[in-house]
Image 1 (cartoon, rainbow, N blue to C red):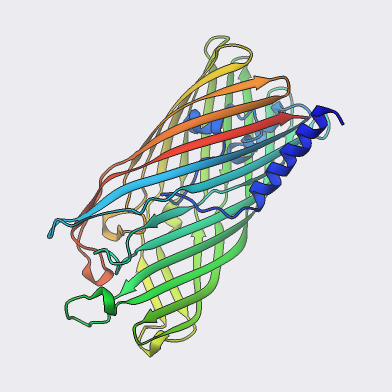
Image 2 (tube, rainbow, N blue to C red; image 1 turned 120 degrees about the vertical axis):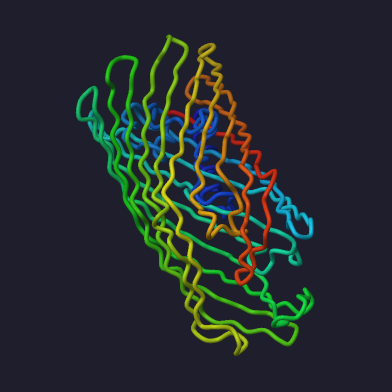
Length: 416
């Protein structure tokens, strides 16, 4: 068999392995770690949109890819951070975890006007975990969200300048939320007598997306992309474990994931240097509350409904990326992102204890014949946040500090 044939088979095998894997994701609710090249450019790929990962940020751009192409990516996210109680001076670090973020993309040119593409990626995720006996345990000691989106698209090349796309998304979403409940009823809290409460549920729901890619001239490209809201009806199991026994029941949560508007303009400054600036508007106002209904009262003492106001606001994410083609094989990249946090002070909690974020990225690409390998490193810095005391919700007069993450991505792509 030819080496080229086995290279293709190996690539397909890796893609299916990653697509079948179950991944956990890092700090933050919305994810943008779709490829190494994209991360190295600070996410500024909506205007470029010229590799298979365009299926995540602007599928209309896949009309720039002749023939067929594969891309697979794997990321490693290592979050860290500390929350300190102001009254006692007690500081607690997040548990050390490494979260894995896989993705895959395939594009195919059907004819001179139509392209097909399908992406498998994670658009939402969350991972915060603290010791079971930390001071904020009555609000949260573990919050994990996993999601996988399967997103086929059709792109239409209207003419040499304009391309349009439309797609549908099947999104699987799972939440695993855990906290302690104080059973002393006013006495001094004692971890030994806490009730361990866990809620885990999932759902599959559907959304849609459409994109536009426009080449203004030989050096300037503009991209627009819209992703719809996705309405979930999560169902699963709620359990309560106490020193006196345990109980479980069904739990149900309605959750609406936000719509997104993505913008980007890419400019070829010189034959070797390309710059893109862009922004993403995320409608987090869809997350106004978290209401959980239980089939029965757990342990005969817990309520059959839990309600937490969220009142998140819609936010912007600004990004700029620089790509320098040093040689036919080697390309260097830099990126910067400023990402606003949607949580207001009035409902800020320990599940997502972050502030506005800045992301500094660097990476490179090596291309040979019909394949390419890309690498990116991102240093994420989060602003400190102050938490006003809401003792009935398990939130103390406290603050977060040194919140951030190290993110590594590796992508492999091949043109067939």
